[in-house]
Length: 318
Image (cartoon, rainbow, N blue to C red; front, side, top):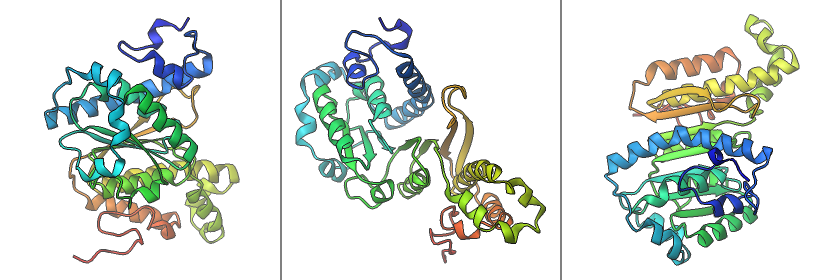
């Protein structure tokens, strides 16, 4: 049998079985336990942000939540993402999960938090693999989770999609590969997200530019930090997340960086939490540009841009 402490009070066993975290006879294997632990850890960081949003929006608890999740599954099948977007979602919480995959995070967030809300709160899962979108859509309908929508879009495409509201409260991206985390940041900036919760995966773009410009940077003693190939890769990964943090700060966000779980569970373990507080931007924007220049990464100024620039890296005239 699954250990009792692995399942949280009120959590749907059926959901965990459908996600293949639990077997049909209630067992939890080691790989599933590791995956569940990562998602629970991330939930522990996200749940206080959701509580803060709920309080700020004065969202009442849904006394009929249990009846809705058990018997009102038809709601999700008759309301399209376009209709929900155009309706503005009332005063509910809107969360977009980029690179959703099988939507472990989205489903557990909904099961543990969203299904108790009596409003138009919505989780959108963004995923490029159509079969996963279809599977998640069917599962949400089967479980009676009307506040979940899944869109077959890339992160970059979602920024322009009319299927999403003009403003989003919270953006998550768990192990979105390569530049998808950067696209998620750009999405969140455009959607004026109040919070971002990011666990970056591999990003090879910065390392590739460091490698490409290595010869002309040899006169700079700093180039010793990425002179050897293995250092280029590791330093490139580290610098990528530093640039992401500076970019967020250059847009008025307060940024905290920590680890998600122990390194024995995942090597992609860095957790970036950004909260919009309209903080001063100029110092961080200057440091961002200085770091790009110092490392020979000027061509990536369109990727890591400040509030006074557009994505082409050009200054925006006032």
